[in-house]
Length: 124
Image (spheres, rainbow, N blue to C red):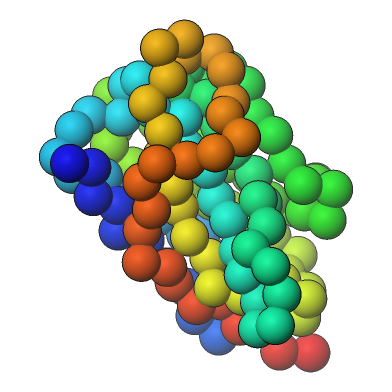
């Protein structure tokens, strides 16, 4: 059983940066693609970005492209979401997610394992 725990959320001002961490237990992340999602009050959950198991492929939503960066150091059971130039519209609960992938270069559309979420609030 894969367990994911996010941390690093908080209250910041517009233009600030935050780095979210997602630590996995119960397995190594070698064959897992990782995704970061967010859900704001009254809105549907959206995929912010994702990274393949190999780390060679990444995806970012247009709304965060150029501001957010996903990383996963080799041999580490942690994935990160670096968020720069934060905007009030980035306010949401952020979740990390994982999915086992036989082919490590691909990024999936759906994920099997989820963390509990961490709140990010950006004030104007």
